[in-house]
Every structure is written in C-alpha cells, then in structure tokens.
Image (cartoon, rainbow over all chains, first blue to last red; front, side, top):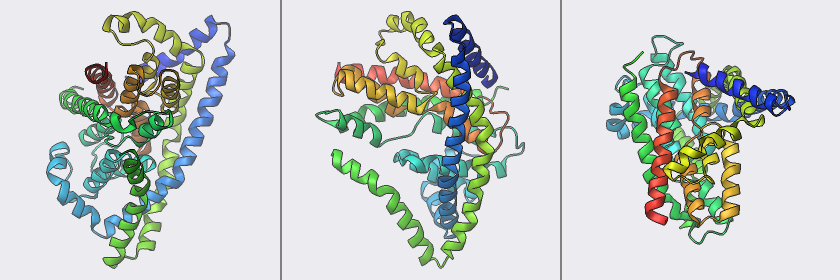
Length: 191
Length: 177
C-alpha cells in the first residue's frame, strides 16, 4: 500500500507540473523535501537523546514498573503480546500518556523509545509485530485530550471561549481512536 | 479555564523532568550515568529514520508543490458537496494526514478568514485537534527501527482519519450549527 501511495504522489506531482508547463516545480519539491527531512531528523537527534536518557532513569528507578502496574489492566488488553513487566510496556504507557496530555515534543521521542523496546520482542525485525501495529495506529489516530496549540490559536484569533473546543475534540478523537482499534483488530488477521 | 490549561501545558514537562530525577535520586540511582547511558541511543534512532523521512517528505513536497493536491481537492468537491461537507474546510481535511505544518497553516488561515467562533472555525479546529499527521507518525515510528513491512497500519490509519473527519463534522454540526 505504501508503495502505491508513494508512487501516486510522485506520478500526480509530475503530471500536474507538466500539464501546467512548470516542470521545475518537481525539482524544487525534491530539493525542499530532502532538505526538510534532514532538518527534521537533525532536530530529533537532541530531543530523542534527551528523552531516551530520561526514560533510562525512570526505568532504573523502577518508575516504569510502577506505572505499568497502575495502568496495567488497560494496557494488557491493548497489548496482550507484551509482558507486563517488560520495559516495552512502561515505554508504551509513558508515550501514550504524553500524547494524552499533548506534551508536544516529548511524544515522538517516547514513542520511538517504545518502538525500540517492542523490537526486542519482535520475531521478524523487518515486519511490524501486532503490538507495533496497534501502537502506531493508536498514535496516528491522535490521543490528545488537551489540545494546547489549538486553544492558544483560538485565543490568539479572539475567540470568546477558546477552551470550548475541548469537548468536541474529545468526542471526535475518541471516535477516531476507537475506529482505529476496531479496524486494527479486524485487519491484523489478513496478510 | 484557558489560562489554567495553558499553565498546565507550560508546567507539565518541567514537572515531569523534576519528578523523574527526584524519584531517581530517592531510589539511589546514579541518575546522571543512567541518563547518559540512555541518551546514547538517540543519535542512532534519528539517523536510522532519515532515509524514510527523505523518501516520504520528497514525495509529499512534489505532490503539494506541483499543485496536484489542489487539483485533487477540486476533483473531490462534488463528493463532499454531496455529503454537505464545506469546501472551505476540505483542503485542511486532506492536508491533515500528510503535513503537520501545512495543515497548521491552513487552520490559521481559516481562523483568520472566518473567525474562531464561526462554524468553519469550530469545524477546522476540531478536525485539527482530533487527528494526527498520520503519515508522518507511521514513517518516523517504522523508520526508527528499520521496519520494511508495516502490514495494515497505513490503511487502518487512513480509515481512522476518515472516521475522525466524519465525527468532527457531525459533532460540530450538532453542537454549533
């Protein structure tokens, strides 16, 4: 699927640029895209390292085990393949909590940490395990309950009640996350 | 309420930092050594996902920059008109899964043009807040550990995004129209 979407974006881009007689737009897109990728990856080096370090402290101090025990029941349902006392479980929980609270730049580093712990449990390191699929799908569907950026934007544009948006966002995000979990449960059985 | 939430989000990370280090010290963990040990992995993780990011972001940029995205939106207008989904917010719905900065720019534009307390403003903010840049999340997460086959994650995420858009439309329609 990813191959087809990738190809579609490239094909549609080239055809559109050609039909507009501005084929140079494709070349510009390539330059800008690769530059942006390097900037994003470079920007991640520092913050991912930082949160990896913090996670290691939390792990060595037993904080992760404590958190897993606290939130275990839900997590065990979502990730039955992950042993409750494995570091992967703690990392999953921390990452999902950060997403819940909308902790911005802590979310991706914690998520990547969880992925690398899940990889330790994965039988085939090039294919996503069930737990990885569930985790990626839940994260990609958004878990945010406190959308601080949106509230700030609404407030900046003179909304009379900027936080009013929390209700609709909470309902909507629950719908999309539940849909994500349900579809994941069904599709994981198909090759 | 607004200031309370903004205060919470300003304090959350500093408090988390304080909580983890305090807990570590109290458990007699050599926190600085632990930190350094853990932080070593960040470099490798970031470098591993670079090729995935380049592949994905180049395709997205070519798609966007060439005007293909705009053309797709025009093609989809009859369908969304039939659903009653406003044309004004459609570009945001399409941009949301593929580009975080792009969709933020579109949201800002809608808030500026129609105001945050208008129907379009509510719909756009709800859409933006309740979904993620799915393609970015999948690329970065899978790339960071070098996964080649991600199975059903992409199709499932896209289905969830569509469910989110429809839910946002319905909820905002019921609450604010």
